[in-house]
Structure formats: structure tokens, C-alpha cells
Image (cartoon, rainbow, N blue to C red):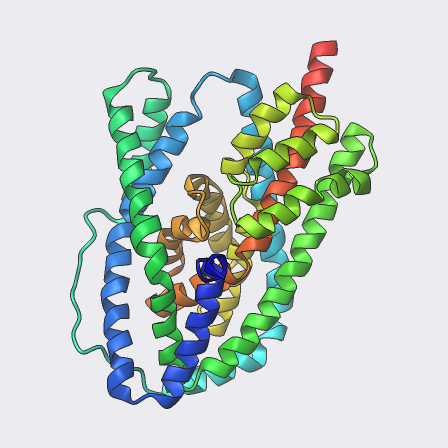
Length: 391
């Protein structure tokens, strides 16, 4: 029971239910308390996002410079390629399905937004960010790349300590308060009359993303099976213990021992598996980018925001890099993506709240997709290494 109540997905589910009940049945004066909290928490998120980008991306990039040479480049290229492919697959699938699937809900939400009323906070506090999101991204890349060429740098130790502080903020402040933030979002939607449309949209989106996630795994292992000349279904079947472990832990890092064991059962040499699997647990996020891209498009369609391929192409390429910094906690990838959603796509505070709720609702399946794909990458890297050795 204690484990259930400590699960973030369970907390978000309870927050959504309570938010709907509070918004429908509690007086406006009570619901305005949650609106006041959301106003403050939203400001704190805006302040923290550039710091999260700096604190997570700088050490992630600097660590990639540790001498693993050609194998590192091969693994990183395949992992990034897989992540970006998943993002574009999600974009084209969503662009084909969502406009017609969500068309009826667009008019409903627009009408309710126009005629409805939102909860006003009792007061609000402005917390300016110390640096804007794009400046933080560029600075993180510059410092991270510079540190990747330095072995014994005092700045690298400072960056590592800063990373520890930022992860403490995420784990001890932001993630624990997210359910209250989401409760406030849904209380406001229930109060304004939007909640039923949003919930039906949630179910439609989750169904489409789950189908894409299964298709992606089948495609990854079909390609891998052709490369290594093994039965793809048997390879995928051997990775199922890692898949189901990730469903339970919601963490790629926590699943590494199982992923390693199953990759070796598929014939990957222990040396290659020991290098590729831990690295891919950090840099291969095909399941995560699929969810974020699909949810992003759905919310943009729902709120009538314009979008095109060029806008999403830039977003996907940047997201594939930014998520490398995602910490090994539930919801880490979406924390790394919030800055891009705001700066590149113009997401509002309400849309960020919905995005977080949608992402966390499917976090286990995205993580499971990530770690299962790690096994496919390990097989390909093992094949390339053996071929080069033989030559």
C-alpha cells in the first residue's frame, strides 16, 4: 500500500479526480486557493526551467567526452537517430490522425474558453528567470562540449555539484508538488466546463500513442533482426523481462541490470552490452519523444495553435538533444522538454499542466519502449564491432 501511494502516476490520477470533484462541487473561494498555488508554482517553474537545462545538459554532454572513441560515436549516432526517427514517425502519424479525431473537441473547447470563466488567484508573485531558455541551451552546449575535452577540471566538479542540486530540486520540490499543480489545473477546467472534453481527448491520445509504441518496437526489431540475421520476434521476446521491469520501475536506470542480462541472452557480448546499455539508458529516448511529440500536437490542435512541419522539425531535433539530460526519475524527460515547449511552441501554463499529466499517465510505457529499444541498439553495435574486427 505504501508503494502504491508513493507512485507518481497514482498521485496524478488522484489529483485529476480530486481536481474534477473540487472544481464541480467546492465553492469558488476554496478553488481559488489552488489557483493561487498554481500561479506561484507556474512562476517557480519558469524560474527553474533554465536552471534545469543548465544543470542537466552540461554534465550530460561533458560525460560523453570520456574516451570510448569510435564505439561511443556509433552508439550515440544510432541512439539519436532512433530517437529522432520516433519523433518524426509520431509527428506524421499525429498529423494524419489527430485533426479528424479531435475536430469535434476543438469547437467545444473554443466555445467553452470563450464563454467560460477561469478561477482567479488571490494574489500572484512574479519570479523572473535569471536567463532565458534558448540562452540556457546554448550556454549548456558550449560549456558541456568544452568540458568534454578536459579530464581534471575544477569547473567540471562545479557542474557536477550543480547537477546534484538541480536533481534535488526536481526530486524533492518539483515532482512532489506536481500532483497539486495538476489538481489545480483540473479544478479550473471543471469550474470552467472544459474537463469532459479534455478527458475524452486524453483517452483518444493514449490509445493512438500506445499503438505507435507497439509498432515502433516491432519495426526496431525487424530492422535489427535483418541486420544481425536473427528472428526479430524471438529477439523482442527475450527483451520482455526488461520491458515489464521498466513498466514497474518507470526508470531506465533502475532497469539496467535486467536489460543487460536480456541483451546478453540475445547474443550481445558482455563487453558491448556493458557499454551500450548504460549509455543508452541516458541517451536513447524513442518512447519518450514519441509521447511528447504526439501530446504536443494534440494540445496545439485542441487549443487552435498553428503548426507546420518546419516548426516541429526544429522542435524534434532540439528535443532529442535536450532529453539526453533527463534524470532517472519519473517525469524527468518532460521536465527537460518544458523549456522548449514554451520557447519554441508557445505553450501556456495550462497547456504545460495538461502536458505533464498526459506524459506521466503514459510514463511507464514510454520507459519500457526506451529500454526495450536499447537491446536492439546493443545488437546492432555488437554486429558492427564484430564485422570491423573480422575485417
